[in-house]
Length: 295
Image 1 (cartoon, rainbow, N blue to C red):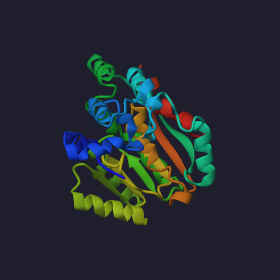
Image 2 (tube, one colour):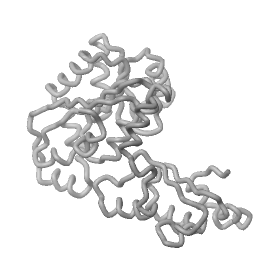
Image 3 (cartoon, rainbow, N blue to C red):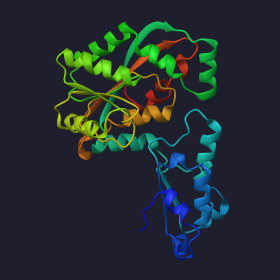
Image 4 (cartoon, one colour):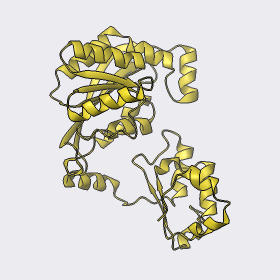
């Protein structure tokens, strides 16, 4: 068995002593929603596995892709290319049945969706609208502005304080927003801390350890805990940040979906602040993703 990053394999693919790797019995690609890039194409060509071709179907060595988010956001062309790379095959074919079975087994937590609706209209300028159309996300200036809304922040703080959840992972709009919400909650008697890319590494590790141990009820974060963070006892995911990418949204939600048989919780509540962004509310990712949850 060879376990390696794509960067390592591509950097050493010209070494003759590694030619034997191309005789693999199976190729497994983790986080395979990235697998449409040229670096993956080069790697699969080196491995002599032309995924998505008739020749690939005839090979004994299959290519298996693993991903919790097997699509490319709202980009249909890229999602089509991703599907073609794996012969347009799902395994198992009944994905809805798989989710249900894993939940019954306790591998995934029972989950419910709760909207936190904020009706005040948010109007974008022509330049801000153009940014959304071009990049598929709100400009930071708008996200920051939304995070500074006092009434909206009161709604979030009240939702946390009135919740029965014991371990809450909160995705804030910005670094300043995470710090503000953590301070508000802490002053209200709710143990909370803020972490971000600006937080010292040792301090971040300290806060995440305390969160896992149950010493902190809420950890307010910005940008750093969407992937690779393990908080199995989180029983609420609160998403304040407006998210347009379904992949990013599901990565956030996924932090709380570990079930009891997998060291997690019986149930996780997914709470999302549903903002009234004029002309763009229907493009927010929760519309795409909420079909995966009980309402």
